[in-house]
Length: 64
Image (cartoon, one colour):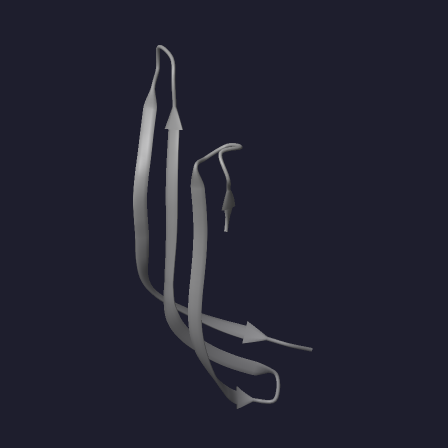
């Protein structure tokens, strides 16, 4: 969580994952991620971005 009117009004990120270790050094994980941002700029080239982006994620982690 961040922003607090410094560069954007509010920015947040949350992730939930579950993993399965299939080998001593390898883990497969899958989950869901959501990112929210509320940004507004003023002036001649004013821009507003207020959105929540979300969807599934997958990954493979190797540890040594």
